[in-house]
Structures are given as structure tokens and as C-alpha cells.
Image (tube, rainbow, N blue to C red; front, side, top):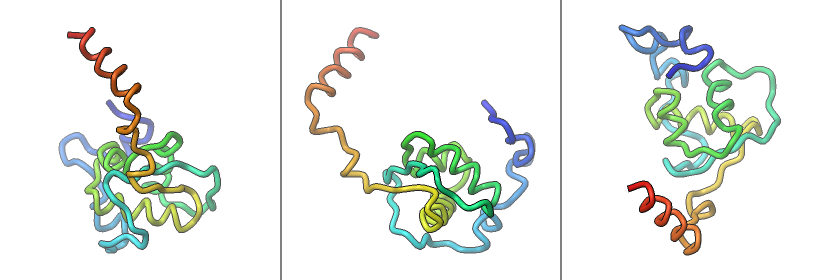
Length: 122
């Protein structure tokens, strides 16, 4: 499944037209501590000077998404995605939360409903 604008950045045979190191200007470590399970959500604020990859990542954060999910949808390595998300945090475009603050594993009722639903599908 492709989204609007994928044809500009992806070539069916070659893959991405822009190499990951070019997306981050050679940076390999994010300026903000992020985990693969860190949740990211757009704040609604951003300056107009974002790069295309930043805008694409920001579009994926309209609803809470993990760093791993964003990386998968952008088809970028996790390290590159962390750098992009860190840039968005610094300009105030997104807000992040560590994985434990979004955890629902303590909600027994929710887990029981999930189990019931899965069992009905089998």
C-alpha cells in the first residue's frame, strides 16, 4: 500500500531514492532519548521549514504512534527515524512519552475483552 507522495521517494526496483544518511545529514544519534516503544503524537505546532521526511513523519503522528511504527511506515531504519522524531521534538511539532506511561497491561478488563474477542474469531 502506498500513500500520497510515495512515488517521489520510492522507486519500485531500487527502493528509496534518498539514502538514510542523507535524510539526517549524517547524524546517527538523536538529541532526545527515545525508545522503539516511545509514543509520539503531533502537537499541532510546527515551523514551516521542515524537510519532506520530517513532514511525512509528522503526518504519521496525528494519532499516537510508536517510533517503531513510524520507522516501518517510513521504510527507514529505527536510528534514522529516532533522529527525525528528535528533530520534531526540538521544534515543538511532536510530544513523546516513554513506553511505560502509555502501557495498558495493567488494565485487566481491557485485556480480558481482547482475549474474548480473539477467541470468538477462532
